[in-house]
Image (cartoon, rainbow, N blue to C red; front, side):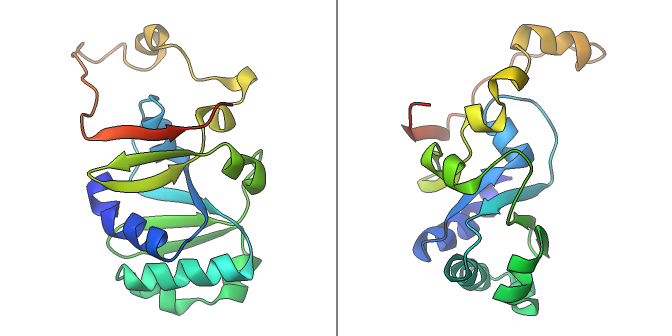
Length: 163
């Protein structure tokens, strides 16, 4: 999935879009196994940032970005862009304030491209931490054969803020 998002992250960086990867991809990047087929991002809900986001999506060949405008994007909690991949842009999400999450974000790198991810502590508050790896098999994978997993060698954390 990250391969298909390289151009998007590059365009976000070039346009100085303030965004955080949240949802399924963020969970996976923090070690929680789950399937996802879209990118969920939380943006700073300001007119200037929304305009930068739309410009970045257009530059990344997301033609559906031309079907909306800044006012409509900011008037909705979720706007879905479906082109090469599906991107769900959220202007707000329960339990996460953008400003707080931005100050604790993690910047990760995949094949030379940097992108911003909500921190594990923000994604999973202390009382809702994801289960330990040893318990995953009990409730999620008990019917699957055991396989050895290896970390993705192409993904690395470049900067991590202390929470």
